[in-house]
Image (cartoon, rainbow over all chains, first blue to last red; front, side, top):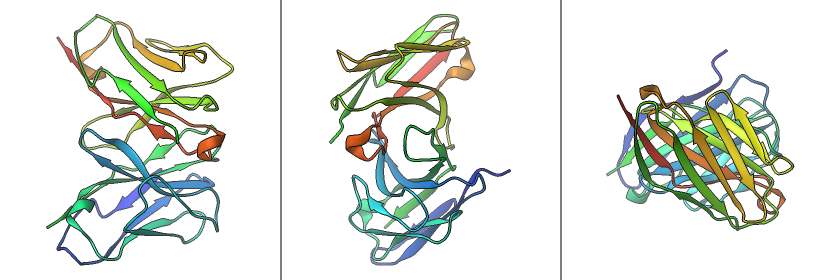
Length: 113
Length: 113
């Protein structure tokens, strides 16, 4: 029972390159989320998927797209990476949106040069 | 939208002392208040949560109190141990945010032997 698995763990991109961050959960959770964590900024919500087949913007969605591939998987895509997207990205899942604890992966550390 | 303020940003205590971290929130409709602990290189992990119909909740050395009138909630850790050293995040969620959690900026707790 792995919980929430994120790949890759580390990535370095050049400005303008694209990449997809992968996330999978094995807890049969309905809701999934992408957060970014920057020093002194806490965790900020990028996108979320309340249930399979739905996605919604969070606080900081610009420059990102998401795909809820199936109930297990939720990917985050950077089409044209910018230095401002240098951050640690966390995927999380929860049983439901309403008042359910989040289970986080161990993060992807992304550097854009 | 919901705004969560967390204080202090850093806290240093001696082993065996108590630690208190405080958070305020702005949206009176928020009704779910979890606390997360993040160790270095890992994702945040839920340690305790409280819902708005409860004023206090305790789990061994950890307790959370909620004052809905004043819109603040606090984390109390008693008999601190070196392994309590980590970054702690409070969060708030409710119907006005689609139940997505908004996080405070975090408190770095150091427990010295």
